[in-house]
Length: 571
Image (cartoon, rainbow, N blue to C red):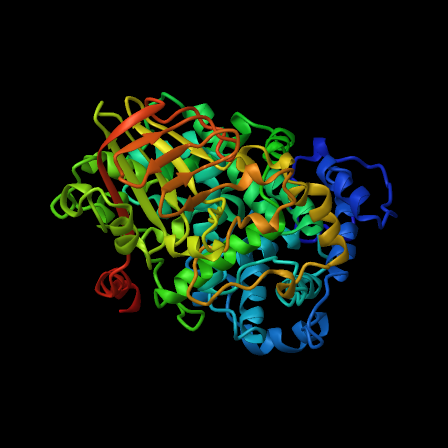
């Protein structure tokens, strides 16, 4: 067909979708390139796609010494020798990943393993990279020879632009990406997340498959379209598409019995057979309709998750570890150890499924209860300060139950001196459990257009000019795990959109702006609730209520608990 076809089995390729139009791509403007990639401009011409891939990858900024095609020609015989390609063992860092064949011929299938081994030889620092076989297999379809494919993959791996995250190469990066994806699902796919919590024993084990859905299960026509956009826009595209896959899975399978005894296997099968229900164009359309946080905020969340993993003893130096399991809500909230006068074990597990992934190994620890410590705001502060995040539970005399997840230590209230001032981050949320369950998150999550800093236009411009670097991200104290969604990162229309929590000797307030989601008096006896701008919530219970019981809970991580969870991974 063309000079880029030596590894392609054209009987497997959808030739009907290929155009023989020999159009060229001459634009260099990022926004135009982005639109062309999303529209599939080069998707229907095999030769054009190959040339575009070469151009885009050649423009990736790389380390000074990056292996090229000549290096491959020099080392491949020494490394592979006379062994059959099919018998070549894969390096441990691919983690027994699928090696997709897509539309490769026999020579191409063998070439994937040869290139992986040569990359392992040239990149000894790679400790965990399960996406690599898929990326190599895909690029072989659009390479003149093995050496060119090797060079392209090396440039992707050797990218040294701090604003461009391409492929995870360490266990820490991979695991934190799974946690970040779980956080995004919790915020943008709440119906699907609720299903995952209900039917899976390990939520993060399901979400840790997200890269496999893309780089392993997606058919060739789909992953190629995703890769088109990925090379232009970067890592955030992968999150978008994975979220769209989960949304479609939930929509198509809603109300139907599971096809296997594993939701993980069901999702994999759905992605493999996605052509039965969703076209590549519809998948991308859904992905880009999701109003995600800005690239900067996602980077902050990724950093917070990496920091949490490091504090739990998971570092980039650990190689070839089994993925540590998320502390399932059934394990985090022990029926035999948990005792609350406000919520049942099941209700606490429901709340626990909403918390950010980086606190998933934590267990609830009661800090204070009005039944034991009395109705005193000063005693509430003395027991709650020094702990973050915390969970505030309230039961009214009318047996209504509501509360709030609070991201920040109550001692922060002193920064305002004697003046009542708001603090906290956009991870705070309020909720009610009785008479019905409802969670209200920060209004910016569902309406990012309210914060101009979160606009897609600005973020893509940042990517194009490579201006976003780690130095542009505000630093946080080393022991803090909640830098994500700080109000100062957003250009908000008014302060009423970021009134998360406030406290004084006279009262506690959660949520503000044209009302307060929760207001509690100094005696912890009476309270009020109404709509507020920060959470765009309905009243959480009777608008004026009397407190029966109040309990703040810490999300507590015991070192012994960490050791128990991580021990299987370290052995």
